Each structure stands twice: as C-alpha cells, then as structure tokens.
Length: 50
Image (tube, rainbow, N blue to C red; front, side, top):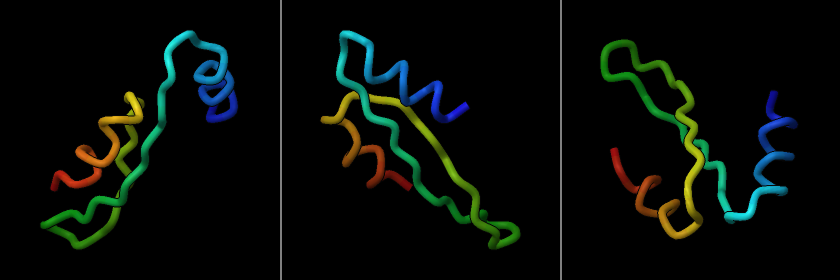
C-alpha cells in the first residue's frame, strides 16, 4: 500500500508530502501513528500541533 501511495505522489502534478508523527494516548500511555498527506509548507505547522 505504501509503495502505491508514494508512486502516485511522485507522478501527480502537485507537490505533496506524507508526514507521520507519533501520538501518545492520554488514557493508556500507548503510542500510535498519525499520517497525513499535505503540501510541504504545512508540514511544520501540522507536526507542531498536539
């Protein structure tokens, strides 16, 4: 699946970035991953949010 997503991002006319961050659950303390595809200019803003 990931290879297909990366391939489609490279061939599209827009430049996009896939960002992945670890998010800690307040209830259990376990970590999970949040993924998002966005413009490169928005990555730092998205990673800075809690």
